[in-house]
Image (cartoon, rainbow, N blue to C red; front, side, top):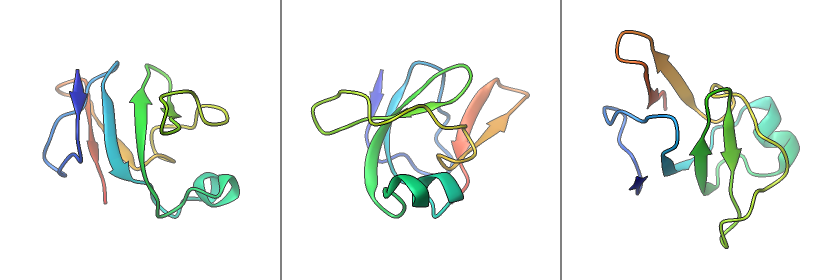
Length: 81
């Protein structure tokens, strides 16, 4: 399932590809993608930032580094920004 520009209240599941503005987290700043609107693929153990052509950008980052928080009750994620 692909979701475009998710809102803070939209639930995100493992396997979803979502477009969001990446936070100014330490890893995103190191990778040079902080503040950019990018697509990410949510995996069980992290988030894979994607290039425009859908290929992987660098290595996976943690959910928190990608700007997601875990909703443990529903086993989904949400944006925290």
